[in-house]
Figure 1 (cartoon, rainbow over the protein chains, first blue to last red):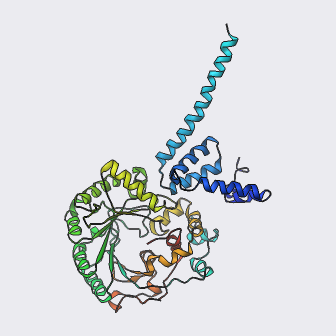
Figure 2 (figure 1 turned 90 degrees about the vertical axis):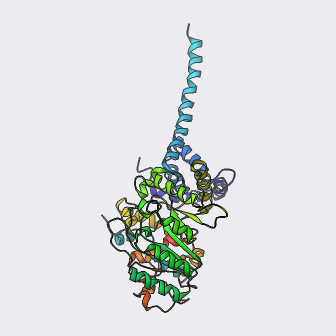
Length: 110
Length: 322
């Protein structure tokens, strides 16, 4: 795994625009707009981002938003709860599909 | 374990003076308005982020003779403000006399407290002295979270700090219209940058009021300075190089104009002068020359060069350190 995920690659994120600069420019403008102070505080947005990072299992995002959460005044209790929120939704998403399985099984069974 | 030089040689951090010159900047004194008095390194706590390595095992404490020499110097220099710090200044036996002399001399006196020493039964009269002399209390309160606070400052400190803040509030500190100013200082409990000051102040005000009915005036959010016990922890935990890179990459040339060393001079427990408390921790004398308060006729002259080192990056990161 380590040869794919290198910590030193994280600060190179901006280089992704090399072959498609216009798309990258629009993406980063959008990204910066999302991560600016608005209806939600930056602290709240960072906790949401940390939860999402765990749901999508992105090591870069987990690294980045763990630091951001700490730097924006969150503590490990809040961050752990945010990960539980991601886990609850992710687990629930699997579990609720059990209804689909039950429906199919019910139809096929006597 | 690697030493500081070895770690720094592996980072992309330029020496601080080169960073300044690359921006065409020099760090020189403005009008020196404040005197910071460090009464000693004796402290009842052993905080992980302490740049002075203060603690119960330290013996350096300002004598009455030095305190009087410092007060004579303050009188000659016509400062606007005196800032009393330590260690835990509560543990200096002459601190009440110092407060009385300082408040008679300048319009604004600040007293930096770790709260637990101020809350101690043995210092029961000190809060009343601070109130009577209208001293501004600046209290360390890093986090609203028990674990974060205690990992930085020691077991039991969170509850003691809450008790002390409640006592200060009962005396009128932090209450609007009382004229008694209570400010909090929040430093990160780890190798990361501090939270934005305005947002943190709002959140601390809301939660301290809601959970304990505590009020305060202002909150200051500062980066930890990579010296003393904090530097040892950074090295031991493998965070030193990365932390220095973070500080250096956050260098803000606009913050240089407002760093505290431009308008403040620091005096140590033994009466020698430094450009700031961090240079004091490193043993870097004011302007690079060892000078005792008794040798000074007045405050340092505007335009004098300020001694710098790589720890200065902590004061120029982001919005700076005042």
